[in-house]
Amino acid sequence: MSHIENIQEKSQCALEEYVRSQYPTQPTRFGKLLLRLPSLRTVSAQVIEQLFFVRLVGKTPIETLIRDMLLSGGSFSWPYMAIQ
Image 1: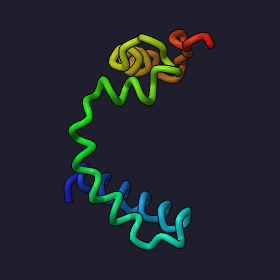
Image 2 (image 1 turned 90 degrees about the vertical axis):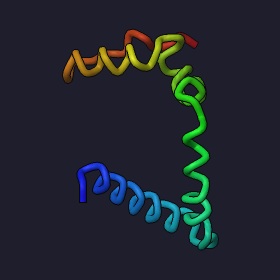
Image 3 (image 1 turned 135 degrees about the vertical axis):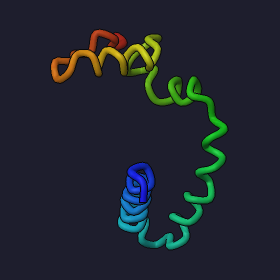
Image 4 (image 1 turned 90 degrees about the horizontal axis):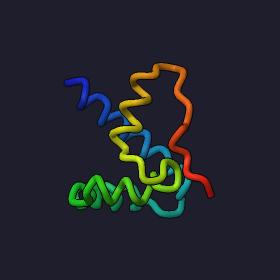
C-alpha cells in the first residue's frame, strides 16, 4: 500500500468513525457521503477558497498563505487576518 493510499484509508476510517458516533440513528449516512465525494472534485479550488478561507485570510491567495507558513517554520503569525 502506498503512502497516499495509507493516508486515504486512515482518513476514510476517521470519517466513518466520526459519522457513526455523531449520527448513530442514520446508519446509511457514511455510505451516502462516500457516494458524494466524486462530485466534490468538480468544485474549483477558487470556490473552496472562497467558501472556507475568505473570512480568515481576506483576499490573500491561499497559495501565498501556504508558502509563507512553510517558509516561516514554527514562527508563523497571521498577517492576513481579515478585520471584521
